[in-house]
Image (cartoon, rainbow, N blue to C red; front, side, top):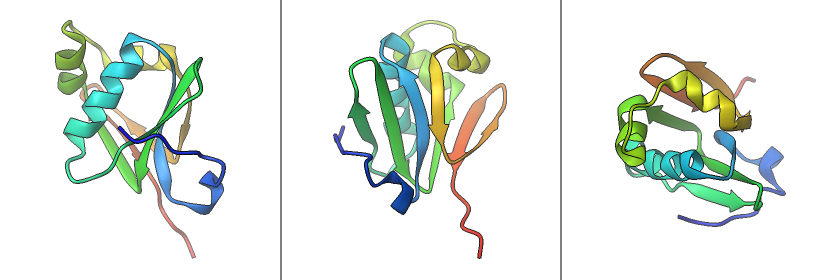
Amino acid sequence: MSVNSSGSAIYNNMVGPVMRAGELAMAVIEAAKIDNPGKEVFVDDKRAYLRIHTDQEMILHRETIEEELGRPFKMNDLEVDLSSFAGLIESGDESIRFYYVKKM
């Protein structure tokens, strides 16, 4: 886990969830590392919330989050602790994708 300042977020292509601190956020951090091999996952710890991001695209799978939590999990339950996000978002029953598209 890398801790990084997001003060310059508008100048980069970072995407991912901003979550209320807690058990689910910690599971999402671990799932982000597993589900996005070869990518560096950054975490900005703001005490009350965590900004979890990586460059260009982040995919989170329900099954990985379940494994990290050690209990069943539904992807729409992520919304309870998801206070914001960076990038565009696609969500389904089995995964959620945060991504960046550069338009010229």
